[in-house]
Image 1 (cartoon, rainbow, N blue to C red):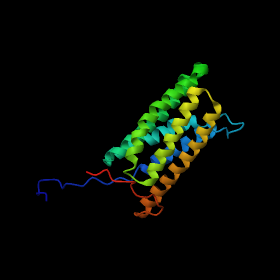
Image 2: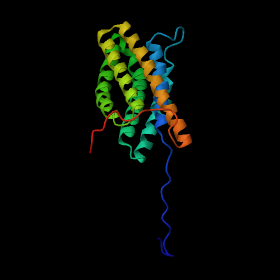
Image 3: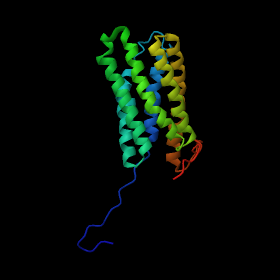
Image 4: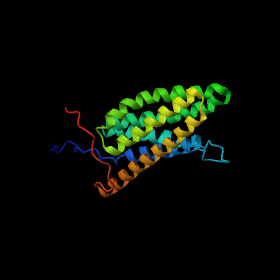
Length: 203
């Protein structure tokens, strides 16, 4: 309780859960790039993902990560901030390096995806402590990254196309998890099932 000479202490307002935003940003950008990798875009340029790598998958996901820091969510802040940086970095590579990379560009992407697959591997393990839906996002993403870096190192377009298909699946799983978070936040209770943590690592 404050004295007459002291200003009352105000509790910091709670913020909305930023995870649905981060997942939605990740899903849409992943979908656009994966559809291009899968060969679905036909007469389109195949670069529809590029602007959104900066504006949505990059910036919005990075912001979601920063808000997760405020929520003291170590997993969410690390995941969203890292993959926000991934999309911004990939966009910069496409603009600054790809135009002069020639045939070596595929190997660049393979090394980038290998590095992120290493990061994603331990995040996949820790996602088991969140819920089943989040685990499935990281599981399908792991498969996408592994298939794509194998295709990149091998210079095999067919493997890259398979990686595109799995990437589309990753996007759909992320969109579902985002949608579950949106309606759950609106109603203040779970509406769409996301499952429980797969197991408990203990204290």
